[in-house]
Amino acid sequence: MRATVLIRPKAGILDPQGEAVGSSLRQLGFAVGAARVGRVVDVDIDASGPDAARAAVEQMCEQLLANPLIESYEIELAG
Amino acid sequence: MTDLRLRVAVVVFPGSNDEQAAAFALRTLGAEPALVWHAEPDLPRDAGAVVLPGGFSYGDYLRCGAIARFARVMPAISSFADAGGPVLGICNGFQILCEAGLLPGVLRPNASLRFVCRDVRLRVERTDTPFTSNCEPGQRLTIPVKHGEGCWFADEKLLTTVEANGQVVLRYDEDNPNGSLADVAAVANADGNVMGLMPHPEYAVDPLLGSSDGGLILASLVEAARSHAAALV
Image (cartoon, rainbow over all chains, first blue to last red; front, side, top):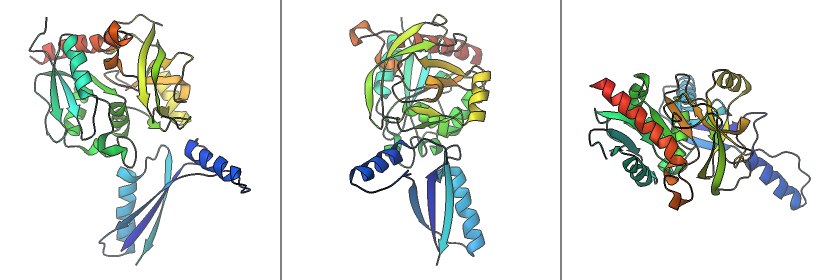
């Protein structure tokens, strides 16, 4: 099973990288507002089913993949 | 004179790069540094203090300090801190202690997105810590920084707690190089025996290096290490 974890800076957290990307896009002539930069982690996981997989990936997020002080995460399961 | 029995552990992670400077500074100040590889399960039994030096442990992958916090030596450092032992994290060491939950908050990319490498001015907020006992209240220090991710952050609730407990030990003095919240340069745990700071005191221990103000921080640590080691015997 493949889990995809999307990690984003929480709303309201200053994201200087996103600001730099947004301003570069505007310089290129794109009409964009705010841009936010996060991270994607794909994990291949052996699990008995989607619920077990999700529970395991949630633990991974809490312990390592995301810092709950500044980041939120979203888990997508496939296969 | 160097007291060979006073040992200060300097923990080395893959990617640490300031451990020799920290060891040099500690030796200059009369302690015997003991370099401890991250895969060791224990600290030297007679260690009076622990220093986590600067660098880029595990290439800063994922988040600074996020992977180093799972190093084999970390439980020993937590136990040492729980027993009241002084623990100092410098730069990457600060990031590791935050990720490990031994210090509040997190270090984020500098607001400027630029790596900053220069002397900064600091204001001493507290002198009743193992890291600032040789400083005067309100004293201004000049110590260099060199980092890309030194922007200390906490959410509103955590910041309120940290300020109410007086856990901010050093602040940038109208000279914030990274955009840290409340100009925080150094923060301690609630008990005051664990501190992290982004500036590098180990590079400011001799006037030849431009400043010896870092020596005040590290000499305070060495004194605290001596008391802690004496209490162990």
